[in-house]
Length: 351
Ligand SMILES: *[C@@H]1O[C@H](CO)[C@@H](O)[C@H](O)[C@H]1NC(C)=O
Ligand SMILES: *[C@@H]1O[C@H](CO)[C@@H](O)[C@H](O)[C@H]1NC(C)=O
Ligand SMILES: *[C@@H]1O[C@H](CO)[C@@H](O)[C@H](O)[C@H]1NC(C)=O
Figure 1 (tube, rainbow, N blue to C red):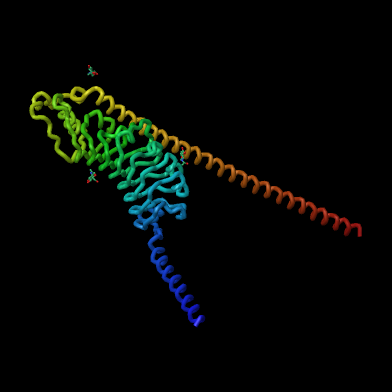
Figure 2 (tube, rainbow, N blue to C red):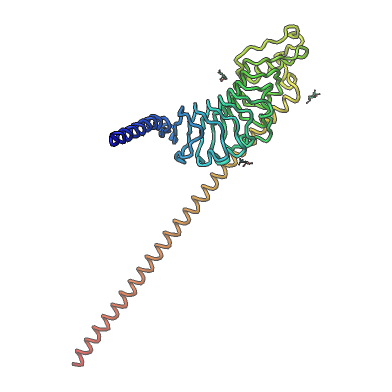
C-alpha cells in the first residue's frame, strides 16, 4: 500500500515537472531573438520583436548592427544596456514602456544612425543624444515630450529626419544648429504659433508636417501671409492649407518682383544665411578632407614607388656583386689550374 502511495507521489512529481517543462518549452521559442544577415545592405541584424522582453538582452552577438526590439515591455534604458553593442547603427524600440534614458545610455554606440523610440512614455531625452556623431534619423512619435527637451544649442549630430508627431510641443523645436534637417514632422502636437523665424534656421527643409495643431496666426500683423510666402519661396511641402485673415489680404500682398530681403524680416534672413554658411563650411571641410586624402594617397604611392625602385636596385647590385664574386672565383680557379698545369709541366720537364 505504502509502495503504491510512494509510486503515485513519484508519478505526480514527474507529471508536475513535465508540465513545468512544457510551459518553459513553450516560452523558450518566444524569448529567442533571431539573427539574419541582410544581403542587400550587408548588415548584421537581430530581430527580438514582440517577445515580452523586459530589458534589452545582454547576451546577443556583440557585432549586431541592427537591433529590432519593438513591441516589448522594456521600461528603461540604462547606462550599460547597449554597452556591448558598439557596432549598433539602427536601434528600433518602438512600442515599449521606456520612460527614462540616462545621459550615458548611448556612450558606446558611436555609430548609431537611426533611433526609433516611438510609442513609449518618454518625458525627457538625454542631451548627449544631440551630440552623437552619426545620428541622422530620430523617431519619437507618440511620447510625452515637451518644448524644453528640444531647447538645445551646440547640436553636432547630423540630424536629417525628425519625427515628433503626437507629443506635447507648443512650438517648433529649438534645436540648433540643425542645418541638414529635410523632414520635420510635428503633426498632432499643441503648437499654437509658428513664424518664418522658427523654420528659417532649417535651410534644407523639404517636408514640414504641422497638421493637427491649434495654430493661431496673429490677426493684426502679416505673420500668416509671410509664413505662407516663406513656404512658397523655400518650396517646402506643407501638406495643408493655411487660411490667413481675409481682411489683411490687401495689406499683406507681396509684389512678384519684391526681393526676399524685403519680404521677410532681417532676423529671418540672418537665420537662413547662418544655416547656409554652416553648410558651406561643412562642404569646404569635406572637400579639404578629400583633398588631403588624395594628397596622402599620392605621397603614399610615391614612397611605395621609391621603395620598389630601391629594392630593385638592391637586388641588381647584389646580383652584380654575386656575378663579380663568381667571376673572381672562376679566375682564381683558372689561375690555380694554370699554376697546377704549369707545375705539372715543370715537374715533367725536370723528370
Ligand atoms: C550614467 O552615465 C552618466 C554619464 O556618463 C552619468 O552622469 C550617470 O551618473 C550615470 N548613471 C548611472 C546610474 O550610473
Ligand atoms: C507625420 O507623421 C504622421 C503620424 O505618424 C503621419 O501620418 C504623416 O504621414 C507624417 N508626415 C510626413 C510628411 O511624413
Ligand atoms: C533690415 O536691414 C536693412 C538693410 O540690411 C535695413 O535697411 C533695415 O532697416 C532693417 N530692418 C529692420 C527692421 O531692422
